[in-house]
Amino acid sequence: MPREVTISACQYLVREIGSFEDMATRVRALLDEADGSDIAIFPELFTIELFITLPNWRERPIAELVKIAEHTEAYRDLFRSEAKRRGLFIAAGSHLEEVSAGRYENIAHLFGPDGEHFMYAKTHIFPAEAAWSTSEGDKMEAFQLPFAKVGFNVCYETEIPECSAALAEQGVELILTPSATFTEQGFWRVRHCAQARCIENQVYLVHCCLGGQPGAPLPNGWARSSVLGPCYMAWENPAGIIAEAKANVEMTVTGKVNLDLLHENRESGAAPTFRDRRRQAGLYRSWPSHL
Image (cartoon, rainbow, N blue to C red; front, side, top):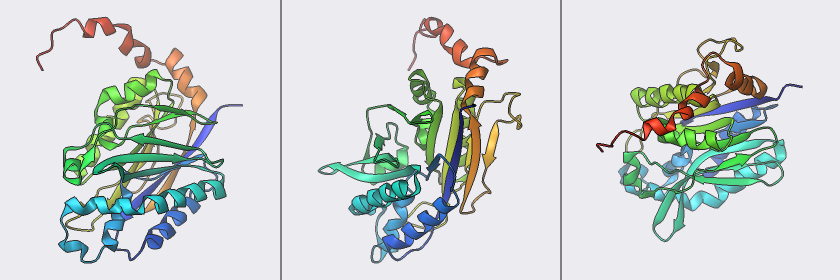
């Protein structure tokens, strides 16, 4: 039997809401569309929508975004219960959380149907995140699930090749990339880099995007989520796009990947990049750095 994994990306658009339950209702609707999948993923910091529930939110400075951390337990309970109820692994995007007094991290969560809970703090924050009092994590971990070994590259981390390489060296087959970009240019930076990371490391990657136009002080978003892989003849799409959402439409897009083909690609593909980019590692270090 081939090792196949069905992946859903729940593309979410920030809009005006009145309560946490308004957000939870839309989360459940997107998960309904992921029925039959092995894993579903939400975007980076989609919980910024909760900022809108604050009184006079448009008059507040963006530095007060940290107030969404007050919803951390409700956020965790929502996804913990949905994973159990649906028998589904859910990468619950990421959420801004207070990890110690005055220290906040952008933390991605992965919940499983049997109570599994993995956490990953984004290690390379985008410069704009500094205005949200965000600190960086210091671990690049891989997580073994029943159907695949996975790891997180949160948005901007996908633009740093070493982040995906660190996961690939640990045996990761699927990279989870919850993302939030403010412009179409930012979206394409992450998307192009995501496709490059698939080719460099011969892995699959799911890029799940946050959209919406809430207006100041919240950032706007540009979204077109996708499930990506290396460009290999065994796949029907020569561009390596396994599934792709419509641009800036709230929806769930689902694709199926074959892990056996991934390892076949590493062994006998026309471009064995996973092997060759490490084969001459000593050569790369032989040049003096000018940084």
